[in-house]
Amino acid sequence: MNTVLRATGSAEFLALVPALAGFTPRQSIVLLPFQKSRAHGAMRIDLPHPDIELDEYVDTAIGLLSRVGGTDAVAVVVYTDESPRLTPDGIVLPVAVVVDELLGLAADLGLGIVDALCVTPGGWSSYLHDDPTMRPTDDLPDSPTVPGLADVSGDQDAGVALPVVDFAEKERVGRALRDLSDALIHEHLPDTARERVNPQALAASLLLDDVPLLFEDLLDTPENQSPFVTAALLWCLDRPRLRDVALVQWASDLETGLHTLGAQLAYAHEGATVPNELGEVFLGRGPTPDTDRLRVALIVVRNAAARAPRASRPAPLTAAAWLSWALGRSTHAAHYLRLATEIDPTYSLALLMHTMIDAAMLPEWTFQRGEYAR
Image (tube, rainbow, N blue to C red; front, side, top):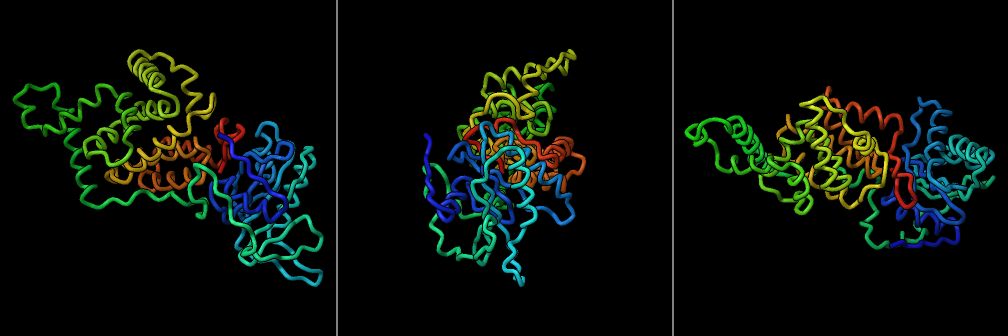
């Protein structure tokens, strides 16, 4: 279902930005790609660091905007904690030089300029006015309610914190993971040796007989998993080939997960080439995934990361980073990557994803109409 939101002026337009972005940006520049008179989403980038090369920053920002199909105009909204400067000639809005460069490059590329606004703690104004006047933010209309959209009062970091889990639960998962590993070591030994293995661990080891089914079942009950089911997931995520199966399957379907597992096993045992289309999914190419599956999978791995022993946490954290990135939430992805590399600075997938995010690489499907890049 498409929800049409209408604005008749700059104040009404500012009220729509949180609904379009899914949050209320802070210390950000938001670019809104327009096609004719409609904006179909919002693209958030951090305010430029003082040491950043301005031309590179502007080129990257407008380059990302230009990838949104059908874009023929742009609106720019700056959210900053900096106050305007008072000069003998009047008010100078924060980040004015950056906005001028953004608008100039957009115009050079033939894009129309819908609006360019600045929101500060003390008020809001327009960059398009020669003599800007600050207006109180308290007078702005409330952000409209959009069906299916959660509270947008938080900023771009809202919702990034892992679930709160008590120490006892973490201990239970840690013991379950140790017992599961022990059960897998003893699975080929005589029954007399296996009698010493925790029966719950033996039951959990059976989940690993059909890993894609385990990944699919977790989408049906993403929260409040037993310690042994969480341990089984952590065991899988800690093995790169199985972790990649999980990510590709959650971005597609069970059938693709089975295909991916078969390809990974063929590669491991026979040296067969992994099909290109599977790698394409991982790199954010191809058909747009079902975002509901991605969101539920993100709940699954965030809960696993919150319950995991420290040494086992980089894998679910990096999985959370990839799923966030696949949803267009690079800010959240970067947070999970920081947590992962604080534990293991050499974790290879985290390092690769850091490179991708630093290069402003986003999945191609986030540039489809109606998707958001954050």
